[in-house]
Length: 137
Image 1 (cartoon, rainbow, N blue to C red):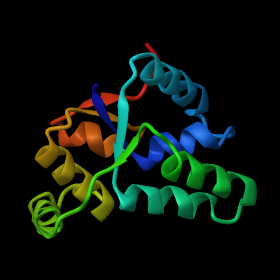
Image 2 (image 1 turned 120 degrees about the horizontal axis):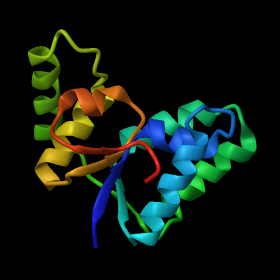
Image 3 (image 1 turned 180 degrees about the vertical axis):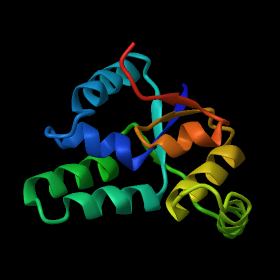
């Protein structure tokens, strides 16, 4: 099975119907389901999504279930070496506005050889190492 990394921007667009990317996120979600791909993420991605929905009780519970009760979501452990590599990446790319979560995602994806990411965050495309799925095909 294929493993596709999911960024917080994708999951937020999927669950927040008022975002401009919502329709694309739904279509991408259907595409990934049809491909029977597994969804990879880190606890940092979950934390970003949960924080976004933390004041919306129903959606907060939905995203908790999405991540923690799903048979297709695979949490990738963040090793100490991933964290130090992420800090180094942030230092090397001072001209970019990557977040720490972005940088950790990049390093985990590199280590796990995950080549594809569902994301509406421009930083994944800027980084240039991954196939970014951000529109319906």
